[in-house]
Image 1 (cartoon, rainbow, N blue to C red):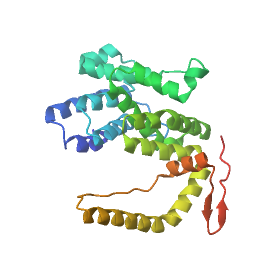
Image 2 (cartoon, rainbow, N blue to C red):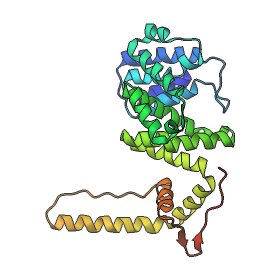
Image 3 (cartoon, rainbow, N blue to C red):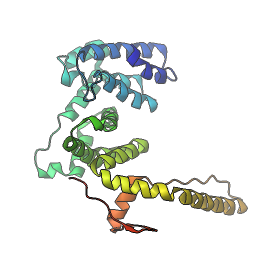
Image 4 (cartoon, one colour):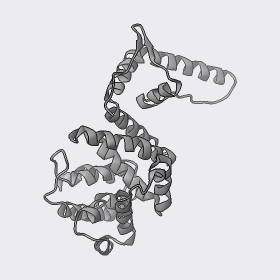
Length: 268
């Protein structure tokens, strides 16, 4: 049960003991179902569904969603069936697990469907319970965190799919921290050289940028307070992928004390 502990620490903060007991049961079923299997890094396969459930527990999602996250690959990858899941954990959990399995099998039928926007619409249309998409987004987030053990061509394919399909889905659902992480990880995997160049330039300029942002925030806050308007002003730095997209859109290059910075070529 030691692999369950990371999830247990999260759920102890907000779930009652009877629901935690159900989650332990789901963990044991998933662990036994995936016995002998390993992820690409060599770790026991159960580490993946536990990590997916942890991502959702950090969002304080309900126990049925977490149970389905632990079991999300069981129907697809093991002899277990929908009926088994329903008998053990109820119809709601079984439907969530089956919903994730159906998304995993979704394929393009033609070029029109293959367009990212059309594919996103297909996903939204076929899912009856939004929690299925939340589980899939958490699944993709953990997959992106562990891309390093895959072949370069597979990394690029998954990264492109993430940027075109899953990050926009997270944005549409308002899950901005997932959207941002998927974009940053996808950008680094798909365009490692461009990612490195932008990261280095942003790091070099970060001190001045922070001072400038703070100065602007203080000025705005001061003016509003003088006018008798209670306020709290906040600001944020753009993420690397957001900076890159803006540069591509405006066909700009970074300018520094060393002149224009060009991106080294990335493999496609």
